[in-house]
Length: 272
Image (cartoon, rainbow, N blue to C red; front, side, top):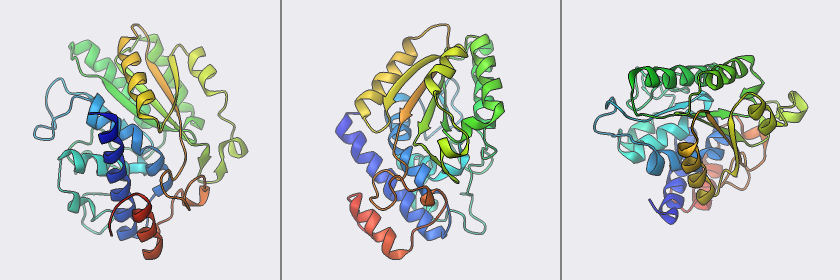
C-alpha cells in the first residue's frame, strides 16, 4: 500500500478509536492513537494475514503487549475486514466480545490475550521460537509501551530472544514518553532505551513512529537482519492526531465526551 493510502487508513483507524471509546464511556485513547501509524503499517503493508482465514498456517502474528491500547488493534482489524466496524462500536459494553483488553478467544485476528504488562512480549518470543522449531515462515511482531518496559519480565524475554537468535521476532516500542502517572522519567526512567536493547543483543533501529517511510524502511531492515531479533524504537506522540489529547498524560485512560469526540473526529478528517 502506498504511503498516502496508509496515512488515510491510519486516520480511519484513529476515528474508529475515538468513536468506540466515546461510545464506551471508558478506555485508553492516548496510547491507542500514538500507535495507530505503526499498527496500520503492520496490517496494511507489512504482515501476511488473511481476514478470511485468521488461523492460516504460515501467517505473521501481531501481539499487542500493551493490551490497554486494544482499540487500535480492534480498529485496524475491522478496517482490514476481520469483522464489521460497527461491531467494534460495542467496545466495553456488557456482552460485547470487544473487551477493554484483547481476548484471543473472542475476537478473530487476536493472537494473544494481553493486559498484564510484559507478558505479551514474553509470549511473542515463545511464538517466534515455536516458528523456528516448526520451520514456519511466519514472523512475529510485538508492540510494547514505554512504561511497560519498566517491567522485569521484558528484560528476561529480551535476553531469551537474543540467546536463541530469534531473527523472526520484531519488537516495536511505542515511545511517547508518557504513562498513566505522567512522564516516564518522573516514574522510572527508561532511557537510554536503544543502548539497553543493544546491550541485550538486539538489532536496534530508531525511527519517527509517525513517518510511514521510516516505519516501512525499518520493517524491511528487520527482515534483512539475520541472527538477532530487532527492536524498532518509534518516537511517538501520545494522543497523536487530536490536538487536545497530544502529549497529555491525562488522556491515558479517559473517554472524550460528546463535544470532545466530535471535535476529535473532525480534526482527523472524519464525520460524526
